[in-house]
Image 1 (cartoon, rainbow, N blue to C red):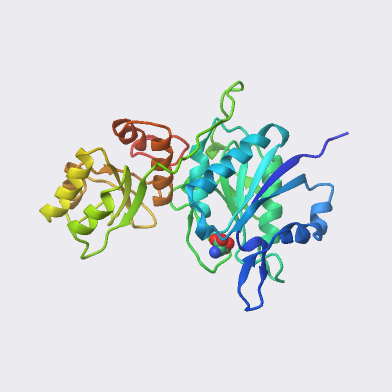
Image 2: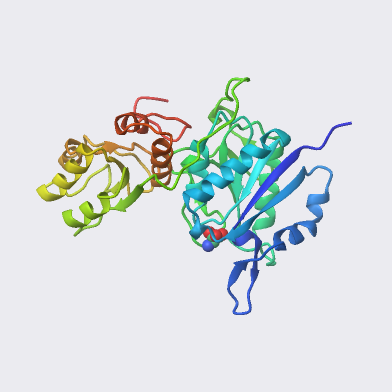
Amino acid sequence: MHTRRRVYIAYTGGTIGMARQGDGSYAPARGYLEELMAALPELRDPRAPAYTVHEYPTLRDSATMTPREWTAIAEDIAASYEAYDGFVVLHGTDTMAYTASALAFMLRDLRKPIVLTGAQIPLCELRSDGRENLITALLIAAHEAIPEVCLSFGSRLLRGCRSVKVNASGLDAFASPNFPPLAQVGIGIEVDRHLVLPAPAADAPLQVQPIGDDVRIGALRLFPGISAAMLAAVLAPLQGLVLETYGSGNGPATDPAFVGALAEASAGGVVIVSCTQCLRGRVDLEAYATGTGLARAGVISGYDLTAEAALAKLYYLFAAGYSPEAVRDLMGQSLRGELTRPGTP
Ligand code: ASP
């Protein structure tokens, strides 16, 4: 007889399992998600995988996530890794793209699918998108040979470290602006096999890189009027900064104090990565003088990395103990399919 596939569900919180409060707002409630899931006939269908729900002691609105929670999720999955065919992480949508990016880096030599999903409308509501998102994620985690951290939402399965939240109210809330979806979720689940990363060597065990509280990473979005003093204050405590620049990587390079603050921090070992504020396209620091000026001050290109993936990658590399020089080098290489450099496939 065919044994039923098994999926581990790490339930971290988010809208999907929230209950309506007396004042009309939504908040997570202990035990409530499992109660709702037990009432879904689809999950009792023999074609659905068997599942275990691990509800975290503090169910979070994902706006309260920190690298400490990323580490807890990664270690939790690693502890259950051998016993399950795949993993679903139920998560709030607000920071789902950050967690998906972080898990992609923190879990090395992954050979089983990890699928993050959630909902824009809680499962307890009539028009919830959570039911379909949950069932799709369970089926992908149980049956698809995708050795990656992915994000399944609405009609698409995305590579986790390419995903961004693009819609605060629409049901197709996520996009992967610089990389095609790994699968389209329509009448069928159509996986684009040639996009999926190859599985690691058969004898390579899963490795987890925790991120400790001592790693100091930041992000700063440039805006007209930003001063050198503001920039210096942000840079002062950091090891790494995601600098969200204009267009193809431009910034106020004609302000000597601003460029000086960048140069001083870079020379002191801070890794400053330029990501574009635009939703699509890539950084090319050689396109304009306002980009080359930043590059001369030590800013490195994040190419087509999302700001979320750049932040998670900096956290990961510094947590893993790489020197600033090595971090600079690895930021420009694709470790989990998170970036494409010009001239490479
Ligand atoms: N604020 C919620 C969260 O990110 C939104 C959601 O789940 O959709 O946890």
